[in-house]
Image 1 (tube, rainbow, N blue to C red):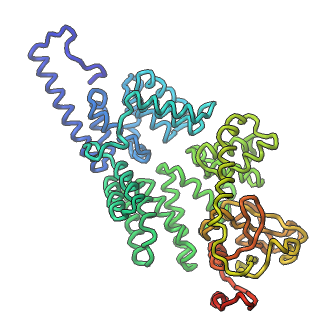
Image 2 (cartoon, rainbow, N blue to C red):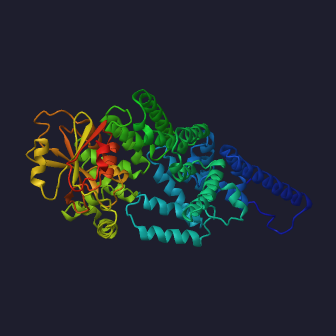
Image 3 (cartoon, rainbow, N blue to C red):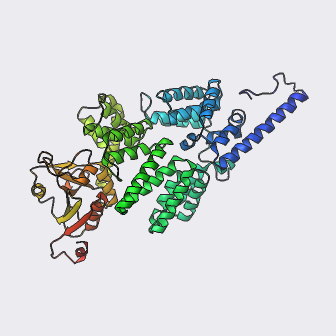
Length: 556
């Protein structure tokens, strides 16, 4: 079968040629039907074998063939022989093979030149007017792999892709038969119904997507159902569901299973935690091996902060974060920058790597270092990225400040009548006491025997802030800046929330968006934050007074 299968150019078709053409068309129809059924059964390898050749001469086959490649996890289900076949057909000039092979190179990245090789094919296909290839170049630009990073140009390429008849394989009409082999469509429908408040219908669509092999929909399904998993029996049913889905070999299943276990880890007893720790490690490593973009970040984080029963290991954490950057994970880029800044990088690094990783984290939708990048630029650094920072990140940063200023409702709407802080001690316990930070800031260091306090502001603390229900204010830790020199005991919790050793007791306060320290006004939220940090016990010491109605005695 060739790229340019046509009737006789003379226009004269003899009976034998006509019969051959009809037979060929019948074979194409049969292969296309088999390929469609294989997609329905999520037999991706079979679908590839059926559709590879018909996709170059038949529009319907082409549409089905591209569906193998519009979900990145499916790319990892192709065999080595099929990848070699794609490469061989690409070198012969088969357009669909070139697109498929380029997408494989860009997503899987089997070697260091993969992106460069993928871009070469995408540019060839752009000249041929293939909308999908133009859209792929837009994605590469947004991932930061061109010399310039320009959202406007990327959007223009998307418009051009649509004008060049980009294949409508993501959001077809519900009545379109193509939807029957495209599980992504049903997750989009589920999301729409969830936003409309119809959770039952949303859940049904998510499960339909899952049933068709789009296991990434488990994430949507879990967040939809999470509030109803209030019993151990329901939690176990969900975990069994994920465990069964892992048999498919899809990386998403392993990641969602590990995330579920990580979320529940602190509620397990010590014996079960040891077993679950190994299970989390195995699931994340399997997910990483199968191509998950975020699995390396989860692994690196667990080793770096010694979470979920992992032993602290900066070397292993670094290696996993580096693997995450190879997959364009913004959080991994952020963590490489954080490790270098903290002096925890186990290897020598090139000058400018912190700046590069900080920018790449922002390009890949991780805003952890947004403030650092903007402030560094305003201090005369990052000059090579001046246009990008001025155009994208300063406006983003100023919008965040404006949202924080406008969002008054979430600051402290649960007023207990007390000013509260917490002291997290080296033995893992915590004391909640009354203290007015705004009025007695100078007296705060005395609580931990310090001359001066240093602030701890890290992602784990921002995560705790969210758990406690704060969206504008954030939980901040304060530690004796001479704790190490005083040879104070290491603080277990402190070492988990900070990329480095923390010695001595930690004071927890709130801060607003402009870094003004303040007391907690809600005992419920403060206790939730302390528990989320992993304190093994919490004591509450409040003075009886006119504002004490007896509600807080139960916490003591």
